[in-house]
Length: 469
Image (cartoon, rainbow, N blue to C red; front, top):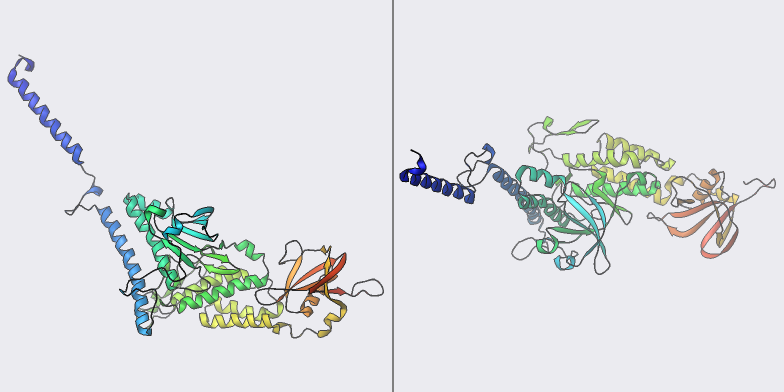
């Protein structure tokens, strides 16, 4: 006898099939699984371990932002400082009086160039309707930080929020830390519907090109180092306390209007390391280490300052300061290199040394020993300018097609011309560098002269034998 011929068996099989199908559909509908992998186990509250870790990281980032505000508020209360950025309710308005670009302005913005991208952010050059060019920073969705977060948590919304905290932190820091060598925050928007997430609007600068900088005149390289020292002195005594730049690299800076400016603050730290003994206050660098003192407060006081200063030495001073420095300024430069390379002086003392070099360079103190008679070998034609010039090139020139150098006076220009075998004349105009020094154009010859009230031509005298003096 077969089951198909037994009504009871047929009914039993149909009932069993219906029950199995019902259970399967319920499991499919509610996403139930019989054998869950260990990593997908849920807690009674429904959170997976991955979700719990993501929420914990988001909480830590939020606490970091709150710490910045608490620190700033505490300092203000101690100093009796009133910040117009605070509303009557005490909430922080991250946009100051200069920061006028918001979501409405950004909605009609036009990106005109790609400036760069990193682990966290993408930077675009954009033109506002008023013709103002700015830099826009936003989350780099293809960046390393986003990719690693997605690998760990597989939560696009949560990862976007986590990575965005670096931009949020940068906004707070740029409002709290305002200095000529920090790019200006011009605005921001956190409206996802308009700009796809948080976007910051910054003063536009050009990425720092160290190779190009190495080929520039010493005066311009000194300007970069001086601006950096002034910035580090400010960060040591900032409204937030001593600030360390943990990711100290040339790529964190841009050039704007001839000045070096810090553009990345998301890896800055306002906390000095805690310690129990001096060995806890260790500064480690690839080529050498330093041990600082552990203070009774159990804090490595001054460690942030020294970290910044030594990084300035190894990334900037080493390459930019000694090369082609004016001979009579080299002793002062040598002292700066020794003191910063061994961390023998504070940032305040280092700044004093830099200002001393600047004063000597601007005032011409390093040229005191030049005899006034050095210009007697030159005939001076004031109110004239040479045309159809025969140019020659020299190192570290302001003009790559000729020889244009910074000089303090006609005496220094005459000294330079006399040291160049091909130089037969030079001219001085009203054009000056950032230090107030004159720009001298040296040449091997010219066709004729034309009137110019802002120019003077100095021609080397010729001996009776026809040789140039």
